[in-house]
Length: 305
Image (tube, rainbow, N blue to C red; front, side, top):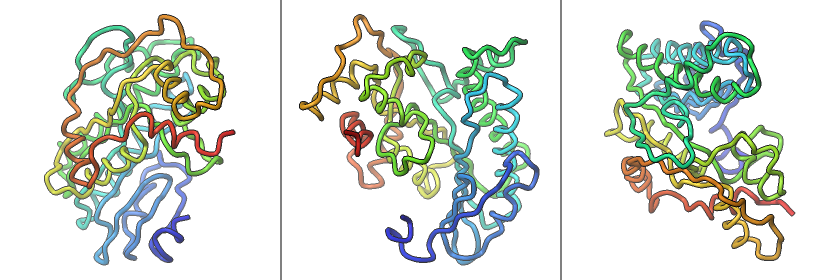
């Protein structure tokens, strides 16, 4: 796929078996060939003088309710990647894929304001409560892992003063094109489930914001390359949604298909936030702003009968 689009020799793949192990990413960050490399979802931009930028997008996506199985390896993976980058003077940018859950959990039908100086202490507290680890804790554990990993990265930069600038990207639910049916797609499965009428698998998913996955990728590029993006937490929040709004998109896209009726009295996300900075960065990359929800949904159902 990458060879066809970018040409031979411009993309490499390597595997790190366990990102939580010290030194896990050292070899990757030492590389010298001019290329673009992914190592267990650690993305590197390279120049002839060495690696110039790192985007750490990997996380533990097991949704295990046991915080000990999720949070420590996510923190260790992030810090190990940053530590490896700090050893290379050629690396000037480090981007971490954080999450909306590092700021707040969804709060249906409640008006509240979201800002980049907030942290999701609510999930951290819920995740680390004593036994039993019921399945209902899984989402809080995931949110806590993103919250605490990002906090540790900012702490690392403050204390270690590496040669790179840290930026973080905080996406809410990613919709959009799925490149491989063999790859776990997390929130990319949500629209597919609605398309198939499978609301049972979505019973724990609250109304929140969405973003097209390609816009999330573009914001990573901006965080890596834009000279004026320094020490920022960048929202990747495009449009608020609930399942009725997804159904409305599907009906417009596929008028030939019968979909379930709207959910009666379905709650909405009423949170307020300023996403103008991310829109500015998308425009700097030649976009008009965020991709519409309908276009993201259209891409999300490509290939579905």
